[in-house]
Length: 316
Image (cartoon, rainbow, N blue to C red; front, top):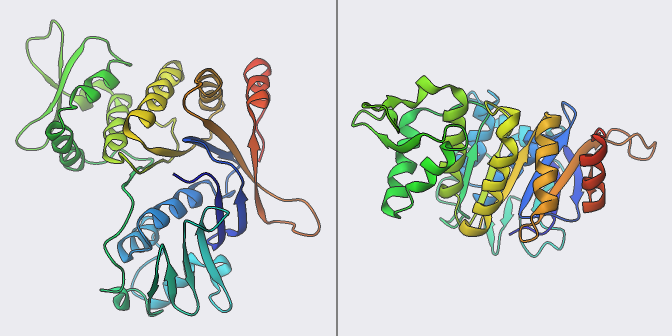
């Protein structure tokens, strides 16, 4: 688990330091403050800088077409000369480095060619940390079915139905048909129904907790936590997620634009004495010496309590 985070020369981060992380971390900030980029950095870190991780980042933002020069997009200001990317903890005992000298350091040194992506083949070993991501959109049923099979093998399929009961207590079971359609069984209903008939929130909640299981003993990222979730259930969702992070040994990084999400998170983070929750705000510095550089501010427990009591705005 990362106890701190240092990101250097990656995308919009010239040199970002977050001195303290928790097991559950909620990232807030204005648009273009780097919230989603921080999640991308975690993905690259956990997947050992593999070609697939880098390609997925570029493809999601429609930045990769065919030109090899598009690898420059992962460097700060798109400049590779005299630049080194580092993603890891502040002590650098655990991290990943990409530099112009074409080296990746991640527990060991590995050479990597700069003519991305073809030359990355066979240059990275298979080591990576368990990792799963929940994006802003609902993933197709067949992707969820693959994780569902994994849950069934581990005899933890009650995880899904218990999660969905946060929205509807009458849900008895979740299962997948032979053609990969997500179905739910409800009390007093003679026939199961597709989960999509019950609204986006139900699918979003299922996706969140299936991915939490998939990330066990590793890292989970959640982009825009509030998507599809009514504010009235968010506190219960956070409670469930905090509990799972300990049971499944995962570290969570989530982003939000919602004040309701922040308030619900703060309540759970203050109340839960076993799982450390951190609220982190990203914003651009106004200081003359480093104007425009993105910096992070950690909120301690007393500040979280004041936010709960006063409803103060968390600014970047």
